[in-house]
Image 1 (cartoon, helix red, strand yellow):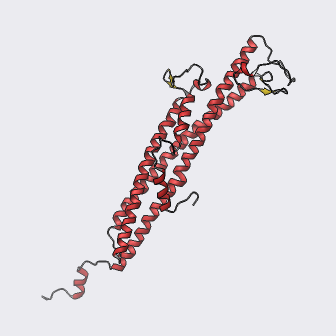
Image 2 (cartoon, rainbow, N blue to C red):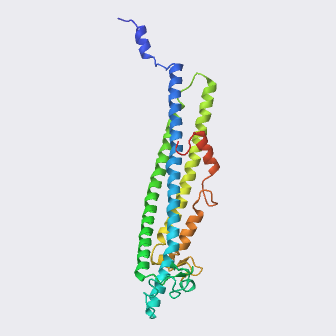
Image 3 (cartoon, rainbow, N blue to C red):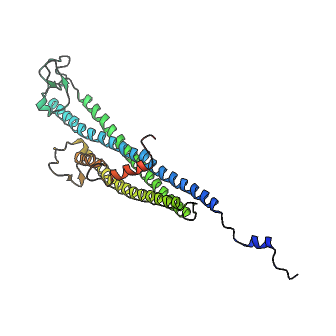
Length: 289
């Protein structure tokens, strides 16, 4: 009785500080984890974010091609029907490829037709149902391309959210690393410098990608809102120089503007490609790597 705590009890009551070697090991583990998050962020930019951008560019180019082709076919159908109403038989020149009747290139306003043996373009061998079938096929393809745009935009937004989660993880990991120290002061300074550099790259690129995504969402929205019966009308027909008529954007001008301003190397782009390449090089990330 009256005796103080024993030496063993005193040792148990004292807070145990991790040894420098354990701190160094834990610090290196967190540093590797930090780099893995940084590299994962860069790979997602390269393999998913930029890949969706390329896919959308290809789809929009297809829409542009369809919106150029559909009005020509519609114009041809209208002229064919007009010729029939005027009494010119639709079966005229069937089986006679060299027949000089039919409809000339000028009268069709560069419509689609057949090449005769003389080298001239005629539409005398086309029936109205053939042109209607071609228009129907192009309209179905046009709708499929629009559906692909919607799906890719949804995937792109999810990819951007995933990048945001990686950036949050990076910030959390950075706070954890600050609690540990390594044996060499020089190593500690090098690690802190690297971590700060990675954090700056990720923050900058994430902000650029967010603005670029919003810019291209607006471009795609203008293309989607320009859908309607006006797709069947050429850009010169009933539109004149106006980009809008009756609250509807000219389909051709909407998609043309979208394709022209789409590239990340364009003046409208929000992404600094040089900064992006520097980050990819720092993370040792290459396409397909």
